[in-house]
Amino acid sequence: MDFVIAQPAQAFVPVKGSVAAFPVHRIYCVGRNYAAHAIEMGGDPDRDPPFFFQKNPDNLVLDGAFPYPTASNDVHHEIEMAVALKSGGNDIPLAKAMDCVYGYGVALDMTRRDLQGKAKDQGRPWEVGKAFEASAPCTALVPASEIGHPSKGAIWLDVNGQRKQTGDLNQMIWKVPEMISYLSGLFTLRAGDLILSGTPSGVGAVNRGDRLHGHIDGIGDLEVRVV
Ligand code: MN
Image 1 (cartoon, rainbow, N blue to C red):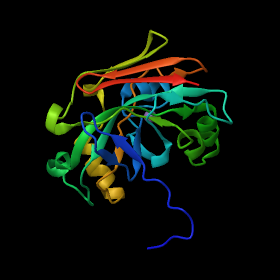
Image 2 (spheres, protein in one colour):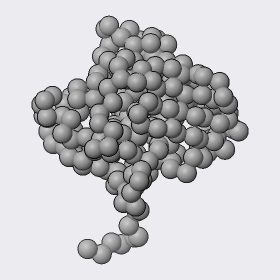
Image 3 (tube, protein in one colour):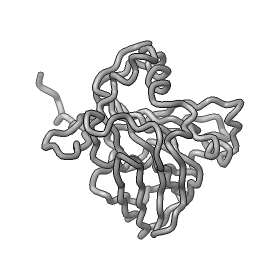
Image 4 (cartoon, helix red, strand yellow):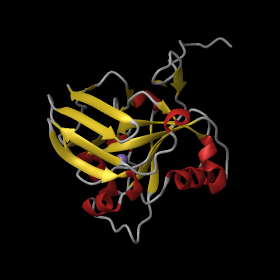
């Protein structure tokens, strides 16, 4: 097929220990998947279940430099586990969901909190707050064939050497198979999809020059400079 303009580049994430990369199809994100974060955002984890939104594949940042975005004065860090899918489908049963997982990464769901807050107040979509340029820094993926499927372990984020976010993967309200099964009832999941699985409490603003260091036990470390 010839195209009338140059084809956009395929978004991808490197794979640790491999020269081959993981091509990215879609990025799904889970909102309010840790009770303490739901509470800090004004929600009630007993009454309001987690929910989904999306970022764009070309919002990924792989070089560790997060350019402070336009149109915001309140940009927040949200450290999250990324789940990469090697297969998908519709209405995937819970018992089959983990067969879809290729591997895991450490990611940031960077958020223009002021624009997100305005969108919430006005009942408008979240894209301006969530799906902006460079809003998804991510590490190389580590295959589940090497590390298994982490369901517990520390997840934390330091800003300039100070601990800001802490949690444990076992605190997720929706576990990974539940996210996959539920999402597959709303969308057709495909090989190449990434799911950012929600952030623990302690989110806060970043400034130019900040050094962010995120970590998830068993997966790795993400180091990002705000430029
Ligand atoms: Mn998030």
